[in-house]
Length: 393
Image (cartoon, rainbow, N blue to C red; front, top):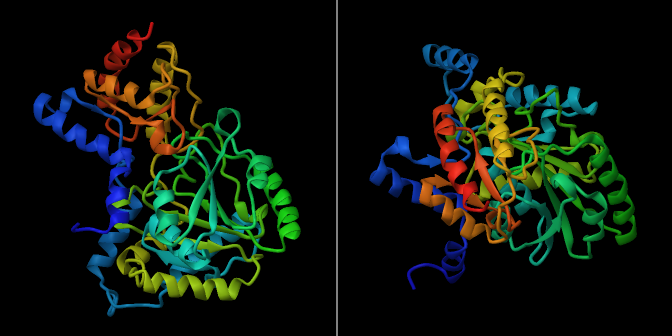
């Protein structure tokens, strides 16, 4: 066997998102790109804000000596200070550069945190539906996931989460705005989780850490805001990236923030630095760190996504799909017309409509639509959705 058994097994159950994207590549060669409606991948079609381009041009025209060399594994002080300033305002907590570690995107950040926290065999709770890579990230570091259902409308159920905590539970991953549902968890839910978690920690005599994965935190609609988890949960981390809010997914720039109130923050910070280095990241990209330093209050034009959301929501509901209207991110997670979501998605392919089954997010019976692509593709997909819905009426 040329590869490890564990990897061979993982390949067999790897991301449905990628599988469907590859299927789209085949269909595009047969029918042409304009006749294939690929709504699978969360790869933003918008360009970075003009402020980003100006900063890039400025740095390129006036290079700083040594700007491409190694720096502290935590990242540049000025970048971490800029992030800490914003987080301090949002959380009303004294966040400092000593609470920030720059990382290679949110995926890198999650792996750094999990490597720092997990002992072999320990559990990480995830709420369904969830981003499928969480399972692989946890497994990377000897842990295992425990799935907990959400309540109506895919909302966080604090009681269910805390009731699932056992002696081996080390962490909880929450994701708001959520991929794949677009749901935002309100402050009341986070406050409830924080209170119940403190009681559980006292009961078990241990710490259970909440890791808040927030790459979509600035992509919200209708006046919604994403509550800062530091306000409500003491033992918490924020992990995020600028892949979505600055439309920089290929640049892999993000950070981990530690709640200043967390128990043993100094040793945790040192653990993060060690893991950032020994996982092979070493440090986040130097150029991107410098570029985002002045862009912490900047984001792409969210109205572009809101228009697409509203258009799709109108047509999906008119066709009879049961769907929760997203409050953030750029995904829908409708219920299938049949229980078998994999079969439903296969039948959609007859109309060159590419979707991702909910089984890939830990919740069969649903499917994910990504709407971060060209509006014309979305418009052209409506007849295909109409024919698909017609099969079940």
